[in-house]
Image: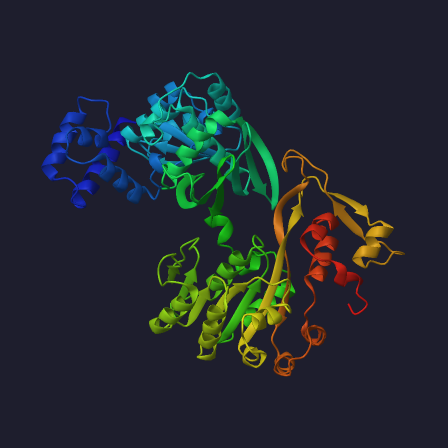
Length: 569
């Protein structure tokens, strides 16, 4: 074992010399010092002042392929702390970051110490794995001081708050982590991300603060807290998001970026004054859930095939419609990712830019400047784009500029608020576009909603009732099997886990373009579109009910199902 340690030190030392981080003389001095010390070579080099701990961590990260642990931007999982005691963390020079999907993320001062990994593995559940991360001794010691010895669960922190003596209000410094308000905010954010919430609502009422999460599109009350703590909590949230803590009379926007469970999570924060105090809502932006493959959107195979066919067209406008929270941006990002390559120049105009995409030039709309959607399109056209993503068509100027860009040989991806795909045409007419100009310049239109997906662990299969057959258009004499929600621990008793897209796609064929030019009624356009595979999204929802991925109840809440009983359907 001693020879292994010597070889490892020599290998690390030679690599540091080769990279020019230390000299040969400095390495020799450190090796002599190592003979009289139990400390690691890297630790000795730092103590001697030959290299900084930050530079050493960066070197170890690059040479090992492991990520570097950054305490300042991380939220620690309380579950992980329970597997390793404070004494063990100090003795092994490790710190547990998170425990998720039977995997422990572990910050280590010496990532090559296999004996420590074996010792830690014995403390984990059977089959659990360890993902090491590089950290310096100071980083690990700071983390141990910050987190061990303090309550980290939401319930425990709330009890501590209710019984605490008034403390100082230093909520800005990471060194004040012992303050329960800081731990409470971090615990709530961690809990919301773990439950896959899309939004966190802090809502002050008369004498209490209500905390609600939006999970799978449904608001769920999580906690109520005495209102005397809201001032400190809102103060902390505004500091984290870069807001003006002194301004409580005007709406404000901010942003937080944190590392949680080895994922970079962004929070878009909005505050608005109400009669009971500032109301704060945080939108959770998870890059992993946002950046999905076109095949993973939840669309049917037929819809995916149609999408891939439409985006191959070299120019024109592709529109995604639906209400707020229907997944329009996720669909646009998936389409851009599908076509993105070194061969084309892709530019975006967003409000705001939610995620950075490789190879894509992204611009953000900013209030108080000339950078609005219409002016932004004019400016982008001078940047030699092939493809442009315009976040939303909101007004006549933006609609006109998007159409002009499509007419000059560009491919435009955008969103619009309309009830369905065919309803896009009267909406664009209302914005001042002529039907004759839309014809030939719109590639296709997607309308979508998100329906709650049944939990695979507890859903129950039953025969559809006579009433369900009537409203869904099933054969009452031969009712099909459908699934219903039950509830279990995995879905928190709701019976649902996640959401799935229910969509309709309208490809603009020659006949439909001719009808647009003739200013034909919407009913005639809808009837003609069915010749080319278009069906109202209610039919896509019915297929997903028959596939047992969603329930009839969740479909009814997401989509207008009256087309299912329409005689023309």
